[in-house]
Image (cartoon, rainbow, N blue to C red; front, side, top):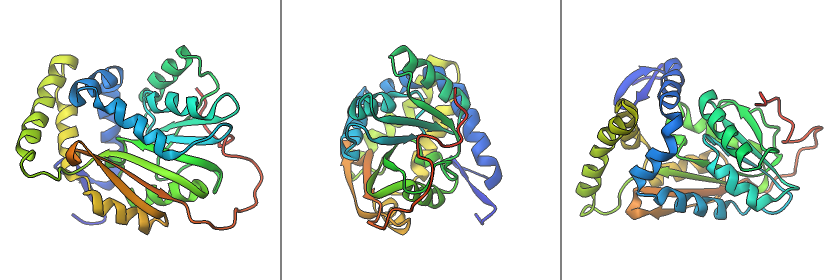
Length: 265
């Protein structure tokens, strides 16, 4: 694999093609995304997302950004934290996932949520203007992870936190065979629920190709984050990584994070 190619699951593809291929996967599963998450995680993804929201340490009146926000479950939890005077920005590269998330959040009464369709590698967010960033089960789908982590670090206010929840590597060799078997069921369940198991085969493969816990922690440090750490969940099947933007002088600039140049929906 060279600079012009990357992995899409186990396939080697042109770097320029990966975002489109991932986009096709998530357009296929958008309507059943949360149902499948419940089935594949036995409901534990909801607990893990609440843990991620706790770790971002958002407060009333603050502005928080949820990247790869998809169907809006984290955005709803974040809105509870920042309250009516705070701002939640849901950002996702996939228009169909944003549509589902927008409809859900509007139904829940969160009409003041801001929706942005954009690439995590090229955030349309002013530097040093958000009080916290979350990203749940999205980083493994990003083509250039270092670029995305650098963009997120740049968007944070000094001392603000980035929290990344993602599938990771099992720490128990005893439990690994059982987990591997459980993963092998996901494409079959996906085909039963949605009629197509291929998106869930990609999911299994993308988890396998994702960096392990220590590698991701080092990537976050290289992006400029400080106080980086992680908590293993379910024996390492998932992990929550966190880090803080360095305490640099806030750059003076006009405008605010709540006014990027989004495609509002």
